[in-house]
Length: 253
Length: 253
Image (cartoon, rainbow over all chains, first blue to last red; front, side):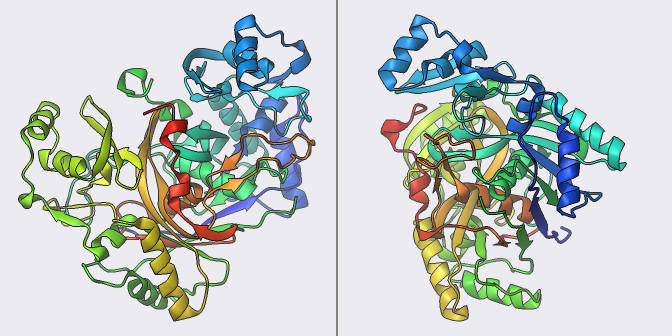
């Protein structure tokens, strides 16, 4: 019942184009220094997955992709890039829907999203595709550890990607990697101000934090990271895999 | 490519329990005054739907609900409250899934969500259920108009509810009513910093703003509204219906 505090999202500008092998932690540190920003205890760092993927080399040149006939036929029918469909299939554990030109897959991480997260935007103008990081929770943990080494602060890290949703138009940013905070805030068994016990309530705070980063970073402004300040998160190991509903509980596969 | 600004979410505390016929605008105005907060040009007001529903009388006493045999049997099988299932069915245009104790419906507004949004929490301890407002876009427009009359400012309004998602655990706050801003930011045809033209990108900014309100308001703290400051929204008429994917484009009905 404590009063809630102001929450701030501070965009981190000045992060240059990321290349394979770059240290995202160093690039963020340099950008913060240039902007005269400092990470403070209690802050959360949200980073768009593309800078992580690029730094880790999770990028594929499209001219090296040779689509199978099935991918080629389907792409042609729906006016899609067959190489993206091929990469999406290669990076999928299974296909959830493939219809009306829309390909929804379950990635190797268990995330359900369009095209296995394979994306041509914000890379190099259409010659390469960015893939999802191999292990986004691991990437988040490594970035958190690097910040801790450099600054001596325990700053939780969220790695975000934008996803579509069934039934709703538009993309929203969601968490695909989480370190240092509990991605779900569980209210079950707690009692509301009227004495009613909450039964089915857990809040996907990591996804809401990612959504806020979506607002703060934008899509075209080369701002791939932000600081979220003032949100009283629940410290924890993290793990975006906790945000993935187990297949047996899911009604939409 | 302009630098992005800081975004702030300021919780509005001190809003009392809302009763049918109350003016939400007046209650918010009084709460702001007590907290020495002022709405400024550029602010967005996000309000949880429950205060709107209560003010508009969209509340049902559970002892007046007489569940049909089918609702009764299904509720008993899954350990659910039959009266909630009955109310959800009465307030639905159709059932999307009814399985494993989970009821997903399409409401009369076209929103797809659990139990048609019927909810027992944060009402009166379990004797009444809150329904969705009859016309949340209209409610948002009326609240915006009331703020304009009182303060002379054009403040967009979002009415938020928390929804589950297929494939992902936890609830996130989403926009069910929008006035004064474009709920979707359309990037199609725009060019990224690498010269690549975006094809399928629209950002559901109203849902991301609602998600931020979820973080700022919490679930147990009697903070049913917040001010979002610093987000450069696109002014427009609004309309949360724009966030609803037309059935013929949807792959998950």
